[in-house]
Length: 114
Length: 111
Image (cartoon, rainbow over all chains, first blue to last red; front, side, top):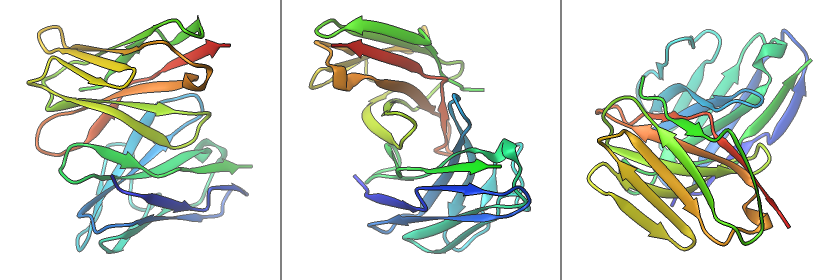
């Protein structure tokens, strides 16, 4: 399994500001995924980040709001831009294990926007 | 969509009892995975069952998959207070490797 860390683990932000979340993996992976979990809800995929190409966004998510970087095979960032209270969620990154089947998740970043 | 749907939404049992959670989905899948989440933290992967498998075991966990009914069940035997968590099923299908999650079951195991 992959070991994934995220920074920050939690943050409280003011509306209108931006927050960049980091995801670090202990091994090289081709695909990284970013999910959002709104309070009391399930997980929704935001985008898939492949190294060396633009991230692929799911319906309802746009690059201007959630820009993603993937500078190498072990690291990615997700920025939540121009935040509003509706962005208050847990943001999680995930990667595949050895094969493209099991997905392992980071500990999440709990974001509260006031 | 392929979204998994768990039931029940919430389940409360006593320590030592068995807990069964169900998951249904809508389209063909490659595999189905079960995850546990404690108090809004990260997800812990529990078990993966492929579309050509019918049953898998891992410790106190037993997962079944019925592709004809597009449903799966997760059985936790001899539950413990530490099993208290939210449990999610997630399905993967097609060639894009995406996971689509169900809404989850909140399991409370009372000591």
